[in-house]
Image (tube, rainbow, N blue to C red; front, side, top):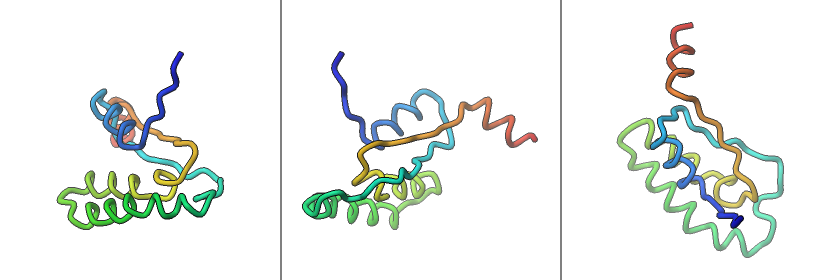
Amino acid sequence: MHIMPWSFAHLYLFLRLNGFENISLHDINEPKPKRFYERLLGLPQALYCRHKRAKSLTEEERIFWSFAGSAQSIYGRRLVVSAETPNTAVNRTRA
């Protein structure tokens, strides 16, 4: 079986299209960036995400760009993402 690496944007889109809400990226205790050149390679993405976050029109969009521009998303070796199904989110707001 082929292993396909997914970015945070891929995971976010996949989860949103399948009805999940409250998607968040969790930080993992690992060295970020591990090598010097990784900082240089990740800089354009960090700047782009910071610009897009500043221009966001909705809260959901701002949260997405915050997670996409985080050190874990740019430099992390693993992505740990959590999300809630719509039923879970509704039950949590009722409680």
